[in-house]
Length: 213
Image 1 (cartoon, rainbow, N blue to C red):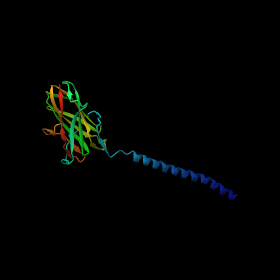
Image 2 (cartoon, rainbow, N blue to C red):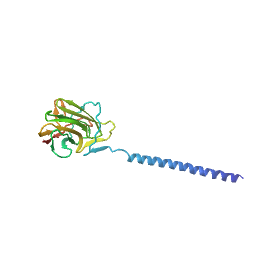
Image 3 (cartoon, one colour):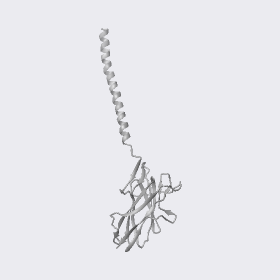
Image 4 (cartoon, rainbow, N blue to C red):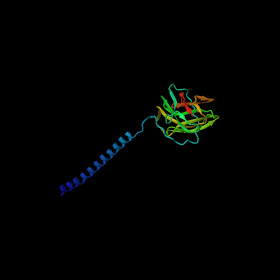
């Protein structure tokens, strides 16, 4: 009788051991799959903005961009193109211009200064070119200033490569050749990028000539 009792005890223990082993293996597999998924779903540490454009609404408040660590040794350039590549524009007709940029520094903000002849052209609107940035614009005398700051939610590095950083809609007011561009400075205001080390990156600038007819 004792022998039969021992055999029955072992037969009830084996299923319990097998069940415990199965649970442990299942938990380990779930953990391993979770680690693999988390690793491959991590966002890239650096992104490159290329020739794409997105429109976002301007924010209501934003501090002026001030660099506190001098001027960076990196380079950048800003140039302007017509959205449809046509340089001739009828007078009193709106036209969209794209502000393009390339930089060797990772950018956390930028400031663009526009100076206008009010008898020749007016700016109808200014919009940021990438959803990674928030902007505000302010008017002064006969010009505009656009401030752009990288959103706090954007953790990636931003490197410009022929990227559209702003869209400007203008309306020519008189016939002739219109030279339109971003100014290097106007008074105390200057066009610049600010890198992640809070240094100014001073861009080279190229304007666009438009034939207003």
